[in-house]
Length: 96
Image (cartoon, rainbow, N blue to C red; front, side, top):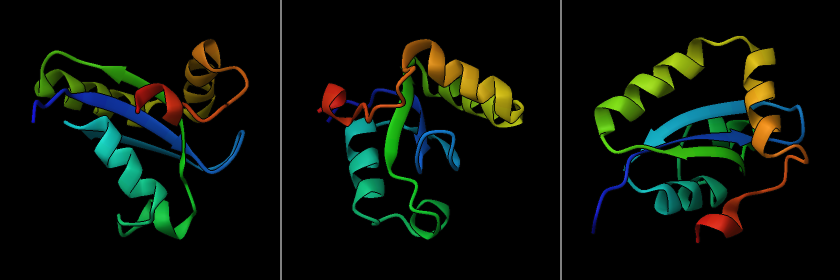
């Protein structure tokens, strides 16, 4: 299975709790979050809606981008989401 690095943002609802992650298999990882197979933050706070993602050529650059986004303030993260997904719709169907 080919690994394609990606950074993603999940939300509990519009303007709700946000989670930023990085993975080599976006479909698998989001599916795991949606089915509460990932222990921790996303399960505890019901953060299951894929509202943003970006693909990268190298895992190192995806990890660097994830760290950058995690340092951003909340308003910047919301602006990033709303630039490409103003309705905060679940992008799950776009990746499967």
